[in-house]
Structures are given as C-alpha cells and as structure tokens.
Length: 163
Image (spheres, one colour):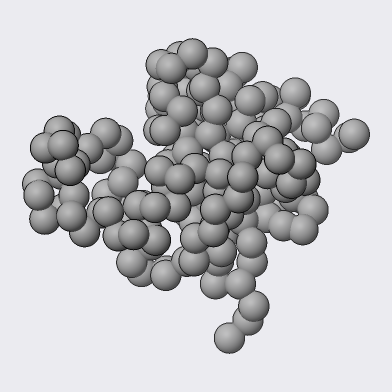
C-alpha cells in the first residue's frame, strides 16, 4: 500500500452567510488543487464542501488536514454516528446543518477511510495558508450558474501560483 497523500482543505466566507469559497491542495507544493464557490453560503458549509471535493478528486490513501474543528471532530469523534442515529439532529436536538453535503461525505469517508488531522489556521503553515488564499479567491467569484458549489477557477486563483 502506498503512503497517504496529505490534502489541505479550507473554506472561506465573506459574511456569514455571504459569498463563499472552498479549496483543497495536495502537499507538499499545492500543484494539484481545486476550488469553487457559492454566491450565498456559510463558512461551515464551505469547510465541508472542501473535504468532499478533495475526496472526490483524489484517489488512494489520504490524510485530510483542516483547520476546521467542525470537520475534524465530526470524523475523529464520530459525531456523524449520533447524528444519523438521532434522525440528523445534533446534541441540542436541532437539525444538523448541511446534511446534503454531510451524507455524501460520510459515505465517501466510510468507503475510503481517510485520516483527519487538525492544523491551526492562520499560523504560518504554508499549505494551510495556500488553501486559505484559494478559498478566499474563490469566494470572490465567478460562480457557476447551474450549481452553487461547481468548481470554477478564477484568474485570481491562477495568479496565486505565479508568486
């Protein structure tokens, strides 16, 4: 079995809710990456979308590295098991947000068994900073007309790799 690849993910939102973006990039250099956005979303939704898109786009053993405790704890602490058992209600008996993203993500996680690792955001980690920049650029649009989270590469995102 090959060594797992590290994929950094991030979500960003200008306002909450507001225009948002998600991004993923494969370590060590971020040359392989993806991003997209939505005209009206939340930061948590973009964090989940980033992981979902990263798993859809990459094969083999994977370690997801995220600054989102929401995402990391969901899988590390198996929150999703309780959510499913409780009819998609959280510990406060409120509906779990973003079920339309959690369901396919949970299915992929169960099939693929990625590992999850938390990284402190905005702390000088080069790869975390890169996906943050990509997600912020994606939040500025353009946005796909047919689906909120369709990947769309913007010129601003391309310029990040010219630096």
